[in-house]
Length: 329
Image (cartoon, rainbow, N blue to C red):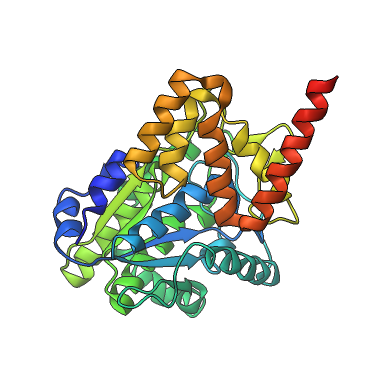
């Protein structure tokens, strides 16, 4: 197997991981999963790093699973949140799940020989659990002390809002997801941002306790811009992957306007360009930053994957026209 762990590390996508993971990824084909929260019918650029994690894993020969949380979406993940999320109806969640599935299909190959991608909905198993059965088969393996130590829970307990029992139970549901995927698809790796580390290790512990097997986790840093702001937020609001919410032109402009201090990191995070190409763009940025060559390549690469080459041509043409009008003033 090609060394995908080394690739993740070079791209700045390793914050924490289980000790034996690098050796495992180098030695054998691994099935890994990431969860996507169906709070809207579209994903946004803040989730693009997560999507690329699965896509990159597949390109290195491993098998990716995307969980669209039709079950956990009815609860809400407290990780990184200061207040409880508004609960959605089952109909809203089903609509959102369908929209997210369509977007993931632009990044993952579901017909690839040997390691096809899968999309699964955790409502397939979570919705069928009865309360007593879930408490007996999952809840009994976690102490309250263990759960209180998790950062996502601890932070909320210290806030004025506190945490409801509903969100407090989220960790158990995600741990059950990992166990179900382990049983159904031999999935041994969960990935995500650093805010998911507590949920991931809970799943690892549940698999160890119930199956006496070893599972693994890998998380990458949460993104902020060089200016210290949250990545993906603009004055106009969230930048969506859905063209009906954020036009391909505005999407292209978002990447074109990337700060010089961020552009090389973004090329590593959000494109499949190799090391030599990114090194050349880094040199070009240092030599002639006013030409914004790296930003143009970044905008072209990401917009092509999300919206297609035709929309890139339109966006570049429109961008050139706007620049020409500005220069004549």
